[in-house]
Amino acid sequence: MSIEIVFLGTSAGLPTEERNVSSVIVRRESEILMFDIGEGTQKQLIKANIGIKQKLTIFISHLHGDHIIGILGFLQTMTLQKRVEPIEIYGPEGIEEFIAANTKIMNFGLSFPVLITPINEGLVVSEEKYEVHACEAEHSVTTFSYLFKEKEKSGTFYPDKASALGVPKGKLWHKLQQGEEITIENKSIKPSQVLGPNISGKKIGVSGDTRPTKKLEKFFRNCDYLIFDSTFSDELREKAIQSCHSTAKEAAVFAKNADVKNLILTHFSARYKDENVLLNEAKTIHNSVIAANDQLKIDVV
Image 1 (cartoon, rainbow, N blue to C red):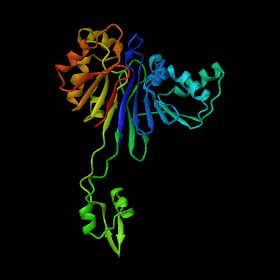
Image 2 (image 1 turned 135 degrees about the vertical axis):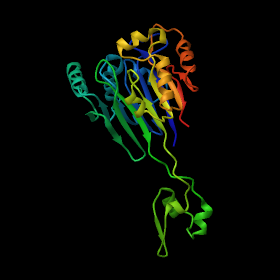
Image 3 (image 1 turned 60 degrees about the vertical axis):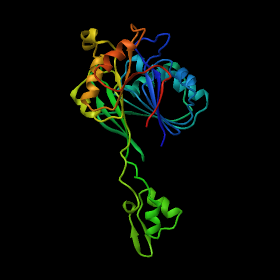
Image 4 (image 1 turned 90 degrees about the vertical axis):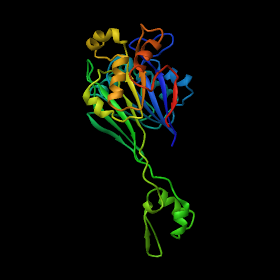
């Protein structure tokens, strides 16, 4: 199952010549999960050559403009393109009012259903192959961090074992591979008899704007990839505390404590023309860190 992370906006608060404001997507085959949608996100999607007629779910971390303003133009564009498939939107209390008030003022209807759900902590979405969970973060307004978590996958299928048990190749093999028990000549055959141990799914964390907290550390434990607020360098730690953001060094300490495999820094203050200042700080703490940039694509393996 192919999964790809695509960064559409990596700047904090203000866009720059090189960086748009916040948005990142997780692509899972023909499905898009979008986390935040700052101004200009739809143009970033065009640059990334990502269409918007496929299944789409949007998760908003909080109601600051650099994380949500882009949703208005995005909805209007999809209507102009005559989209009919529904879109689901999840976010903090107030998100429904924000979208309803602005679409009314701008006087445009929608060609597709928009299903808006205010969230609390816990399970937000549960699909056949994955879940999305939310945890309250520490920011100046109500803010949620998100965790995309694949469900366990079936282990390796061993054809020799299936043949030895008298299972003919074809539909019955497929059923066993999908975790279904089958019956042949009144004999039950369980998937565990022909499959190796289940394989843990991938975990991808998206922090939104936040201070590092013990609560989030537990929430993001053992993530394969963690996308974390890294607005400032450590010399501006007091400013980070005052504005309820994190430094790159704090993000790295957090990731190390949470046993995160790969840390991705994002949400950089516009004062930094070169993100290597932040990257180098984080690398002194964690052994697998990269600094995101707009249009960065990462295959989740």
